[in-house]
Amino acid sequence: MNQILYLVRHCQATGQEPDAPLTEIGKQQAIALADRFSKVPVERIISSPFTRACQSIMPLSERLGLTVEVDERLIERALSPVPLDNWRKRLAETFVDLDLSFEGGESSRTAMTRGVAVVRVMSNSLCQG
Image (tube, rainbow, N blue to C red; front, top):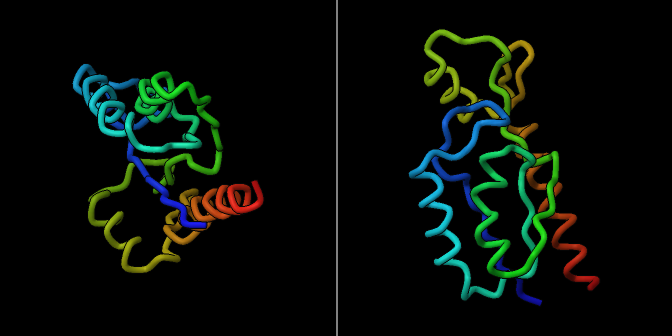
């Protein structure tokens, strides 16, 4: 059975906090996303619990009559719990060294492992269903 998986990043948000909502532009982007995918055969929607992620996919969910399944493993990776000098440079370093993590933060590899676990579970359930 062939499966197509669409990974969608959240629309423009007011910030990085878990409860940061979409901006007005982000709300327009969410509607455009729903327009784009409303004719695509989507069987399941899984989202990060972060407000911006749920708000990004909600218009499509409503159009298709699908419930948004929230999965904690899809939260964004925490680079560090404290502000880092040159954070963009430090972030780039974590994409070169997938095991690099800063105190209290998460490595790229660990974050990828969480995401892949969601995809594997989803794929297995589709194959069995």
